[in-house]
Image 1 (cartoon, protein in one colour):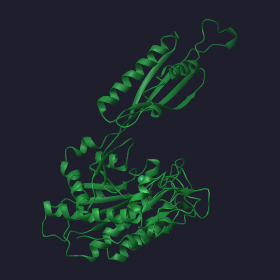
Image 2 (image 1 turned 90 degrees about the vertical axis):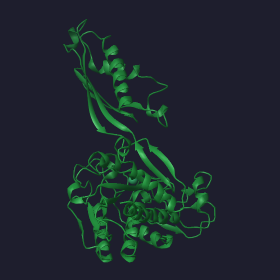
Image 3 (image 1 turned 30 degrees about the vertical axis):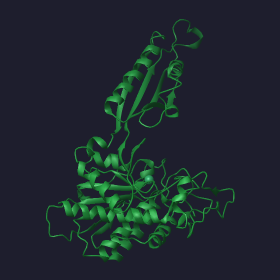
Image 4 (image 1 turned 180 degrees about the vertical axis):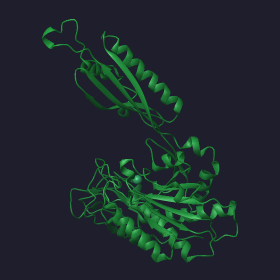
Length: 416
Ligand SMILES: [Zn+2]
């Protein structure tokens, strides 16, 4: 029986939550904000403090560490556990004051620094699972940062467990903490060679037991329209205004379907994100999303046809359509290594939880890792209402996430 104490992981999590690590989508630096390194440095110090000597951090803010194998078996794959140190730019991450409600009694939780912020079971029914156990909230003026410091805490607590329980056998365990996940740069400067892991797990998911092995496949598309420009005083029957063509294309898009605001579950969409232009030349940028690559291709064909049909109504206008691959559904990689997800399911069950298999209508660091050599599904930590002032997490879920990490490493050792 593997047991991690909800109280000790709560204390660890609250220590990390107080450090401002907000990332910045407007920055082109790596990391996007220097302050993310404050947590990276603390984590390095704590890893050393546990006696994990093979640990380092770099100028980009990544933390790499290895807990060496203690098994006699030589063929165990190195397994990475990964979480991100940054918090979302959507909500303040400054002066985070985590509040532990040690025995949550089901009543409304009024956040002390802003009584307008009230966490209610009616809005957050998952709170019911945490009656009489620990719930951590922010204090009202900021997010909590359980996304993803709960993942960081779960991995650190599991690391401590391995150090303190050398009789528990495992292969090489690789620990990776990344900056800038929330601004889509979590894998931008990662050194996969240095990491040296064959398979990985991000700890960046919601309800206890949830396991995400599927993400969107994602492309960008740009439609560039070239108009015909002449002096506006003498433009009759000659001028074609690219801005008006772009407007007509946007107007020709379906209004009841095929958009983020009209789709859910496994439906894909196209979504115009940016319009740039002058009368002479205008470009429309789109994101295109689906769970399959075949679906993506259909969306491109359809979008291109709508645009071409519209442009045809403006003789003289010319369009170009270009596609940029962004990321791919991790499932296509994970299906080639079925043990990665199977062992995660078994670990979750050994931790005493029911599995909730989910697909993400977005990408994760794991989808990028899966395509740069490290198949990497996503595991729960318990985080709720993320990126908001009402963010919260149950301490027993975090403990279960750490237990799942321990079980996973044990299962990889047993099966090798
Ligand atoms: Zn996250």
